[in-house]
Image (tube, rainbow, N blue to C red; front, side, top):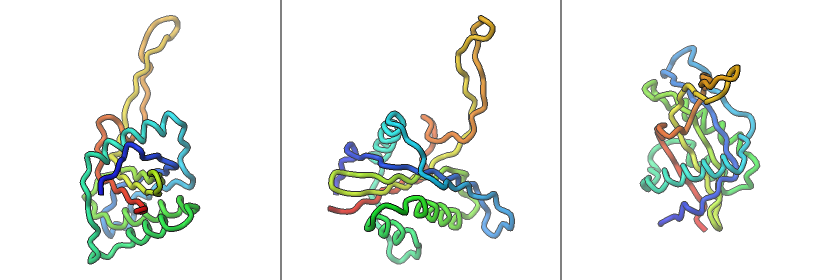
Length: 174
């Protein structure tokens, strides 16, 4: 079934940090789980929608394998079939499961979970993105002289060069 991702609208987003963890590590780096939805202004919403639409158009359809035991399909089905009042808890549950399923070879990443709408249908997008730190240089004036103000920027995600490790898009079929 072809989906017109150009009509996708992001309603709300939440982001969690998923650091690398080796299975059976007694002291893994803790997850950094958001407790509330991330604020989105219209500019950020439009930017995310544009980037995610492009990634979705470049993706391929995958069919669920019912022989694999995972709580994720049930979590997604339950979320999409009910009123969306448990978005934060659902996203935290997905983040915890993702962390628990990693084997130590998985890179650090950011988990972006987006509650979305298509015309006539609710949808959920789950994206694991590369986590980066970077340096930002802003052109400015210092004591009347032109210079670049250089600052460390932690926790970057979805830069123009960031990798999208995985993206899942799930919707209610109208």
